[in-house]
Amino acid sequence: MTKRIKTGGRDKGTPNKITAEIRDAYKDLIEKNLSNIDTWLQETAKNHPDKALIFLVRLSDFVIPKLQNIEFTSDLERLTDEQLDYIINELKENVK
Image 1 (cartoon, one colour):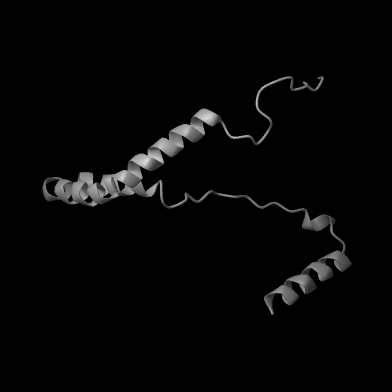
Image 2 (tube, one colour):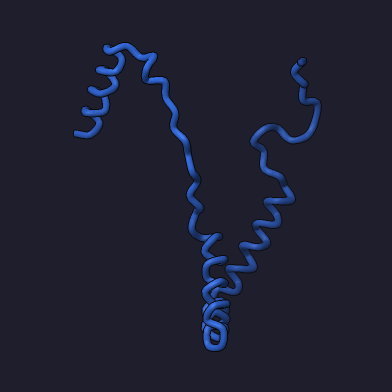
């Protein structure tokens, strides 16, 4: 299979302009309504505490980064005893 050559579009890593504009607009909307959000949450909680909690959890998605699962795999069996000793000593030094 031949490797394709990129002939147009954005360079790799360049953010999408429209997406950036939408994020900025959403950020401005939230910043302009910060004082209202507390009021909305309290008013909603009076009659529907479950909906207020859902609102709070959904809003937290924009403030608290989500954790991602990572998988670590290693081929320690392929390392020599000297290489393993070196790694262990380096780890010990970094802990001190």
